[in-house]
Length: 103
Image (cartoon, rainbow, N blue to C red; front, side, top):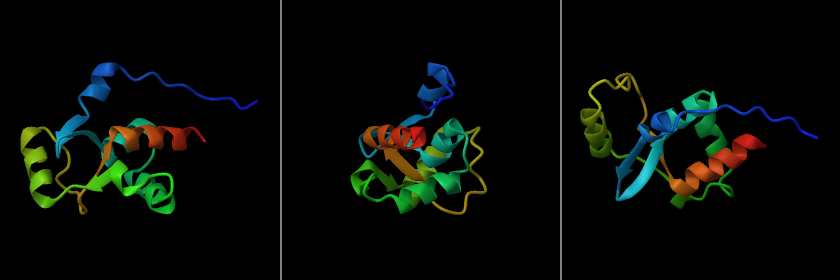
């Protein structure tokens, strides 16, 4: 039997990381990586390596304007040094990522 570790994250923390872009509720790769305790580049690496588990409609890359708008809404953001535009995961994408993280 496999032992699993469970971490409880307050709802307020998760809710503060949900944004609406392209009329969809999304979470950014950086925020999801933080919640899962992995580096953002590792999370995105797994997405690229598992295209069958995460089809393109489960996530998308923000465009320059969307990212600028998001940063302006979050004046205390720490995204200043980001080199690539972030991936945004839809509700289905977040669900699929959590299933991948459990395995």
